[in-house]
Length: 181
Image (spheres, rainbow, N blue to C red):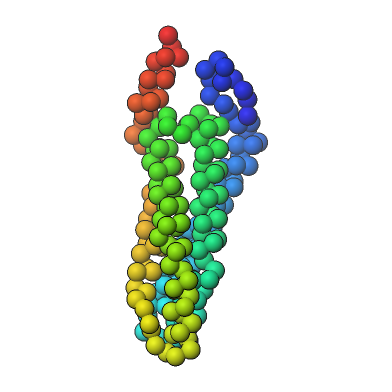
């Protein structure tokens, strides 16, 4: 990263570093999307009406294995997105599409941390009981919503990255005015 910040110019990543961070960002998004698809499939199986053993195993997989990787992918996307924002011409608050993507990512990370992860132990326990006894001891129908919300939000973020709508933010316009004078 160059250090031209004393001249009022934003910091910039060298092209090779920017491309490496962008690759990590895209891989993180791809992993997150894949995990969401797996959670959606497992949630549908777990909440379905088929074999109790399969349903129980699906719930155990969700409760045991999927929250950590989802959070890791989300944090990779957040960290690399911050680096790309600080180190490229797009900035973090210069363009509305970047601001919206940042807010979407922060909201999704918060939902994972404060809504999804705290319930994973209960989901695992419901799955264990279901596999052992054939009885569903809790409501798991809500498990379909997290992957639907996440897939929708991530799709919106991808579309924003491609189309880059809405132009510059007020912050960017004020800063550009100061630099010209």
